[in-house]
Length: 455
Image 1 (cartoon, rainbow, N blue to C red):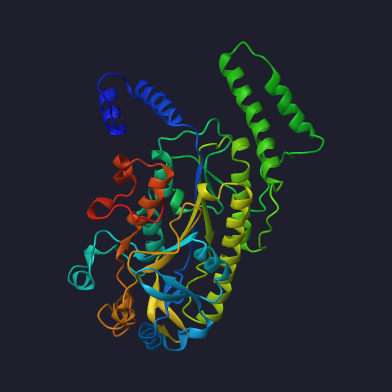
Image 2: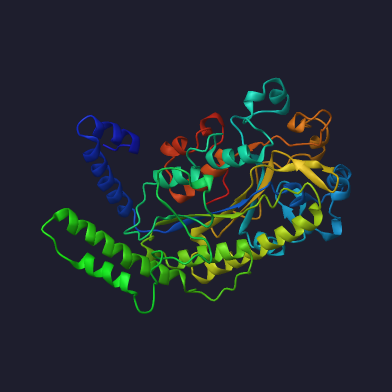
């Protein structure tokens, strides 16, 4: 007789205490996970804070569609000749932003896909339905803070990030982790908010015990702590504490040494996102030494609301996307060098997209957006979801942003939800479908649970 994970929890709960139940569950799941044979997979999130303009990231190139795009964008329109052309099966001809040369090359290799018109949704909804009942959309629509929280928590309360929930629900166990396998490159990411253990690995931050060097001659206080930890006492509690202190010091030196070296030859750009992805590549290369032989989940971020391009958008976005392109290209090259390109999937998202129409020399806060997914397991060279007819955003789907009278600039209602996007990534990582609704709390309201961009 077979049991689902949830059924096993319920049956155990009727016959034993919670501690014994969790111990039994841990052994059962661990045995089941290893019975399937050891495998390794990693998920890498890149958050583009501020709302990257997806409509100038992926642009229609077929003449009629481009003409409508150009008319709608005005001075923000990128010239046809500058775009990096791609052919999309079933969708036509499009172009990547001219800064995305590496991404276009990976697209041509089938290693990059685009997930179209994706965003924060409580349920499937149309513009007229939102106008009639605003509660059918996430509250705080177009607000940076509230939508950053929603995109990473899938609700408006910053209580449980879906990255943390995913890590806590995976029935896959690393053998003996020295540090948590949920690793963020920045502090206080809502994506990892929650009870599962996480660690911050900011590039340039020395790892180890504060005030105690990882190499060289130990100072007097370090030696004293070592000596205290080695003392055997009649008290079992004291001995247990001493053993944990000693192990913590030993582990900190091991981890510090791991991240002070680069075990690959790929050169990463000296940018914020470049160095974050380099740090992630080191953690992947050192996964066995870290005890992360089965799974790793990472969070990287281009912060400071960098993509909030109300002004100077053409030059600002070109610079930012150039940094994204160089960093992601180097990262993919590193995974190839390390022999794990099929086992590492990288994905991007923002709190929202931007409006199709111009606002001075920039754009306003929008809703739907286009996101990149990269990796050897990606069914690339395709669009997932539907790229909307550009003219729709010029009239029918205009929203009054921030309730300012007359400020209508064309925000697209998403047709793919963050829950669907995240769940497709999570299933590839090993989340059972029976547990998906525990992580992706709006998922059951959508008819499609998986988008198909991962094999």
